[in-house]
Length: 232
Image 1 (cartoon, rainbow, N blue to C red):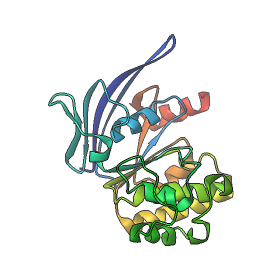
Image 2: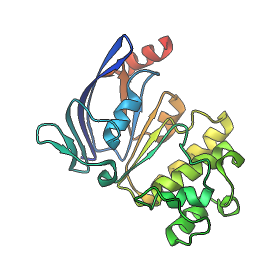
Image 3: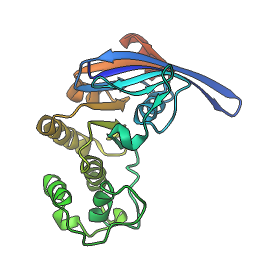
Image 4: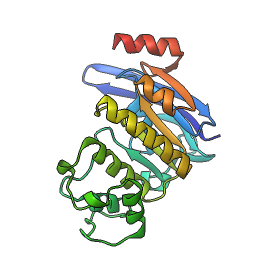
């Protein structure tokens, strides 16, 4: 089993409460959580990554317990060794492309040197064809270049799995298709499991080995998820 997730959390936003409960077990190497905005997809991803703690339940990846409320197991995000790519990419604006990627290798908060030599950084600059842009800052990059930089930073530390939060949402249709193709090729090459969240049918069609449908914080049928997407 690749993914074994059974987590619950009560979320409160002002006067509005939201109860999230996600249960799924899957052997899929490329798992997609599909649902409308507000379904609980991002909170689920953050709980898998260790950025948000569930109220109860368990998270297992490739048979290893990352979190279990019953046994008080709660690995830190670093110990989980999962790479998380945020929807807005969360690049450091004061660091170059090379420094942003190298930051993925650092355990502290000291900025990597601007011309730091590292074979893993060079590998991912080459893999994403970013050598010419390595000394540029995020504001000087296109949307696709920012996404490739974020992916390179996530992958440079050789994670056990890749978590992607709506990775194509901010891109135009043509660029989205090109980057889907590149991501599919990348996943085939590196072989690590991926969990992607989206509300885009084209992401599902091209990237999913299996789909878990979410609506209002619960796993639902495909028809229910699509009905919720139309209402959102």
